[in-house]
Length: 499
Picture 1 (cartoon, rainbow, N blue to C red):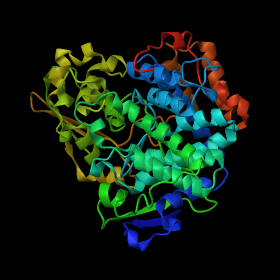
Picture 2 (cartoon, rainbow, N blue to C red; picture 1 turned 135 degrees about the horizontal axis):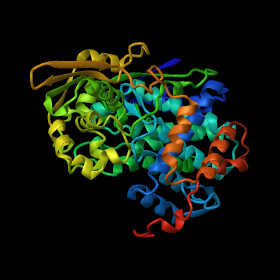
Picture 3 (tube, rainbow, N blue to C red; picture 1 turned 180 degrees about the vertical axis):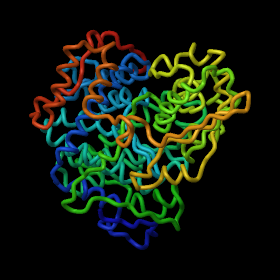
């Protein structure tokens, strides 16, 4: 890996573009390195994973509304939309929008956690949409996805956004633009301009993940994808971006991150070096914030030791800074303890999640968040006995680059009414690559089939899975097969709005 030192530069310094981070990212995107079999296999896993969680969310209002907006923009050749017939085509930026919302709605696809948080699977809808529209082959798609994952992961390792209350999609816009640069074989100059535009236009506050969390949580990555597609289109026409976008005196570092005196080191692949960051990411077995995954597994394990949950007096979860301050009591959000809170809020409340997991011993992406479930008196009583506390060692393990030490779980101490104590720890979820039963292709397929079955017919599931398996050898005309259709989806999609 090659280290890139970045800091703020005054306009009078006239920082050469070749010394700018956006240029370095563009060079990585333009480097035509081979993708090895292990990375290719993981790309296919994530295409399957995205489709499964999208299928499960297909009838949710947010997804239906985004799909309706996309269907208002038919285009030829265009791109497919999840749920619609393969012959139904819309403009690629709108396909990226609709499919991106579907993928993100249930908070159930892949994750990467470091200094910043990321759901790198958010890169895939835009890349597939543009690939279908312009007509490239499957090998190019795989290379593009590998690039996009690499850039988002590398930025997330180096630059914290949440520290400054900036939403994590500010890394996603540039990563999608880079991935599209690889997909289309663009010159470094064009990719550079698109990256600058994408960063400039996708920077927003973290209020979308704070307090009363709304459906915009699902829309935010899709918006970044749509913006990145449009940025590539403008850059290909010769339009330019603000520059230097990261290092300018009124730029990203100086005004939105740690200020004019701050500096960062971003490690990116050097020339000819493979893009393998996707292998450092991990998917979810349960539909909840990733830091909840290990704690759900831990709740399942602990509940066997507690025959009567009503005898619990208090639960303390010692965990990382992020878990405590984002989904724990350290967030200071009363909504995280409110049975009338939105689904999006509940899946960011480890207190609620741990209580339900303790009571039920199972997890379901719909039933576990149902209003009746959240209003169960026994659940509310247990829920309000749970709090979190930051433990410096769990924070250290969260941030370490050592895979043997990396941890996203916590240590739980349960005090019973008789003052006896039950305690246990779990570092990573069972489904994590270093967990007790890590996900492989069979588990991705099983997850897809379980989530898709209520909506997608078995023969359509089979066809989709075969198409993904064939993706490395797919011709341009075969890329439209990498979607799924549901009978009557177009006709039952609600209308409204302006179009």
